Image 1: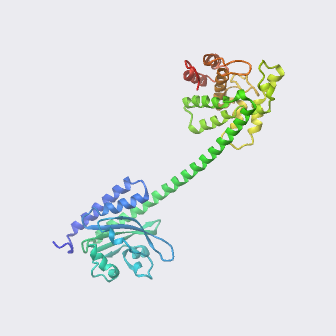
Image 2: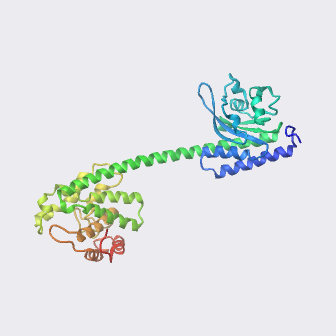
Image 3: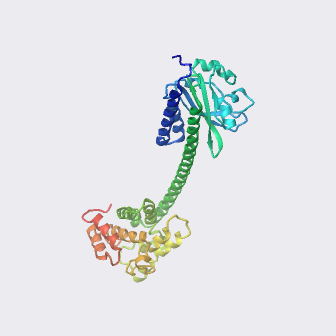
Length: 390
């Protein structure tokens, strides 16, 4: 049979239905709008008669050009060098795509050799074995945003049934594009927010590290203490199943938990012997000093209050305010355990390090009394039997 003769309607209907089902699969499996447009065109042109399919989106520039967004088929070369418009004042705007976009209705060329509306592209169509064309508008919220064009190697390839099938296909594409665009915009906003938050976190981390190092310059014996406490605190919090965001805030607080010591005379901080009662009380002011230094900084976490509470104890025996139980922030309760372990493990001006076993014994003795029971048990599980908590 000459391929330019009209085939039985059942055959053209089969092509259209198979293309519709293939496009349905593309809509279900594709993960982006650009990938969807390419997959749709390739799915359509798997049918033997459809040698080219492409999707164009209308622009609102002065020339009203149509931008090619997806192409598929053995006759894809037909589009090379062609400028398509949807303006009624140009010849390129009076082809199937331009008319479909402009009118919002399907536009059919049953025979490209005889239809006068296709005269500008007749010779080119013959070169690429194109003999009938159907263009259907793609809409979002009743607004035409573009068109889908299908080119067949058979004349009269599109009956009313195929026009109906491809019109429904275009409607599904409109919904699909809208869904992808919403998702892509949400993704874009999400990553923009993530980048902004990452910049903020980097800035906060840098600021906290500078503050920590400033303290360490005044008190060489504190060098590394705050960083080590931060590491121990995060190990405990991770074991407790805390969220990454909560752990990050805890880490920042731990990095500067002793910042209030900046107001304590250096000779007290580095004194190689036991402190006097007055000196001891002065040293106990450092959590409150730290709070006063940090309270006006707009951290996303309660950093200032965590610093203020890191020497509180659940039985009320801590300082500076004698808080009890749930009055103490969970982060401060973790920090209390981590600070005790690191302080006992490490060397101090007035004594050598007591070792990790001694530190763990203090945590055991205080579990459920001075220290939160769950936090203490997690610390014991993590560090008992080890030589170092780090």
